[in-house]
Image (tube, rainbow, N blue to C red; front, side):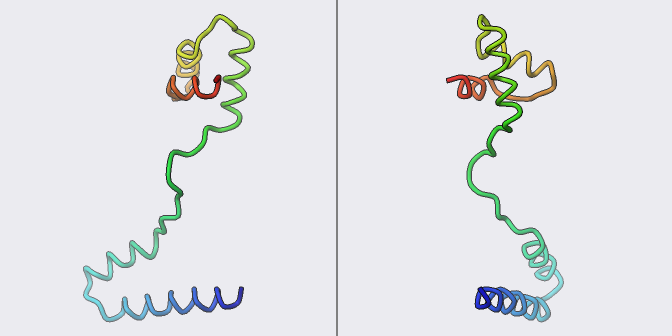
Length: 91
């Protein structure tokens, strides 16, 4: 664990030292890269569990509604969701 911390701090120190000798344009670009890490994983974020529960409840209370009708009602309530997402949750 301590080796990871030392490696991380050494990397940050070297990056900062490299920043000191660059011209202004390169410094700005490097600052942007160092300031905003890209740690998001691949793919779309999952649908919130509360929205999943709402979709399942709407389907249970209205058995004649299809996935497109449920999606339309959710859009009217202010939940922007695709009909294919509703279909995936129901199936």
